[in-house]
Image (cartoon, rainbow, N blue to C red; front, side, top):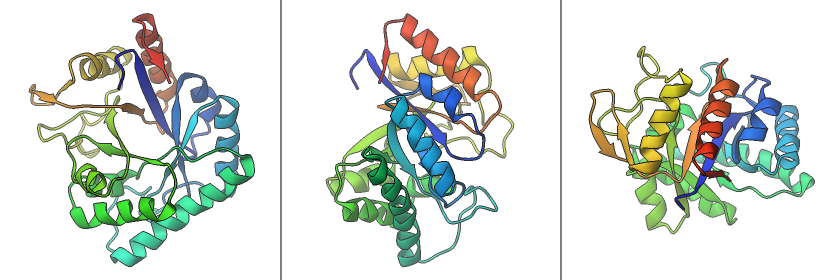
Length: 246
């Protein structure tokens, strides 16, 4: 990542209806494509907004589990998971082709993202889907994760992702959403969290340790009430320091 350029991404199409308010502040979005949330109408609406604001578009596939919003691991075969993930991405690709905009990246959602970070079998399934698409598409992955290693071995281009509004454990896994301190909810705390990762290439864990973490893109979750306030504050502070969001 160039020192003065930061990519801010947000998960979208998840039923919050705040995409029009978020788009002016971000540089890329991850669109739910039917696994945990989203349908043809929501995908079309978010694609149109992203195109209007020149925001890069990514697919946000998950375990097929709308009931749990994709936040629970679903026990399924590699073949079934491959098919589910590929079908979700293809549903979005069909809309993108009609809108004449490219697919910039793929970012798994929720439990699928977290499992692929530590489980080689799951990571391999996702990487094989990306390879099969045969598109110049990046894969958003956590730094020093299993899926990052698998992608690099398979010559799949990656972007390291960090979370602006989530706390980290010492092993760089995210603090479980079951814990009271999983989310960072104050604008000043979000800025300090991100600034440490941008400027020092380190993250302060909940245990107080400073751990090396490289990031090319920072995610702000769009599925909570203060998302717009948090992302607008973060972007404003970063721009005031001379950083460009793109």
